[in-house]
Length: 396
Image 1: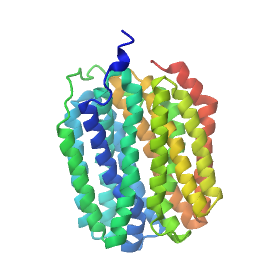
Image 2 (image 1 turned 180 degrees about the horizontal axis):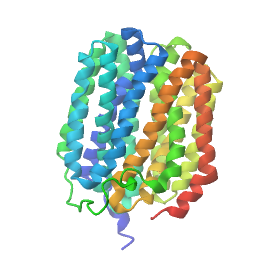
Image 3 (image 1 turned 135 degrees about the vertical axis):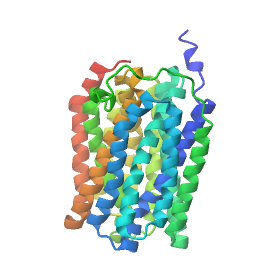
Image 4 (image 1 turned 120 degrees about the vertical axis):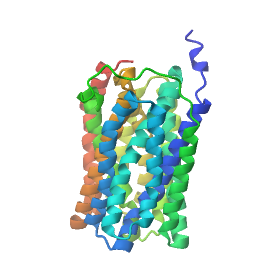
């Protein structure tokens, strides 16, 4: 019986559809993210503090939505939840085009975070459902490749379009079209029937957050904080301080290549159950990358750190994702999926907000050293407590 398990097909048709839909979600998301600081600065003359506040709103709403999304996808038909959220995520791109003032743009951007957060939770939970149980650990790791490939291609496409046309409306329309394609793909996914969770108190805390994963979540906040600082300000930093026009496209390409390489290589270790080993390698390599970015404000540090951080995060994130899943019973898959995303959102949001404040008043160098210091806290937390806690509490 055990010899037959590895023969179960990983890349079944439904998994391919869910994987592709996730690619479309993140392609449309990353098409705008690296250039929004430039858009806000050039269009509305927003300073760094204001840019941080506007972009923080999106992360805050995504966080709030994800906190409830796990419960919703565990308690209601997952495909229906996914499609409703996907429709809203797609339609909100029109709001960017219609927004004629900074206040209105900030409102649209903030509210858009809710369907984005809910859609990513629902889609990742559906991905777990369509994976064969014997290939689930490996499949969860490879699922993230859709994010990474989208993050490799999308910023480069966005920067090329912007440098050619200097028209953000084209980017907003393209983001909506790509999201709509993902929505159509999701409509064709087939899910088997399952028992809905109805035997728990609707407002019990463990339905909204995986309490057993609290230490994993705290360290994930630290890792996401560092990424939030870099990913938000890397484009405007490269343009203003290093004089690298379009450098963000190359930065995200190298970052994504590192992510893709490490996910492919790490999936073999995950298949063998080496989850904490992958996480340990990831948090260690990422720490080196953030140090390089902060300590070497040159093109070599800029691009070299991108690839190294990609290598680290590509090992760390899927390992952490499996840790959350393995700490949860089967009836809390949605909660486990939302918990890691909530932790990521908290970190990203804080990184965007505090990164903007520090960059405005202390300069980019201070902001990037802060990112490294917070990453170091996560690194120490993993080695001192998280690794042992997970091994003691995992269910499978």
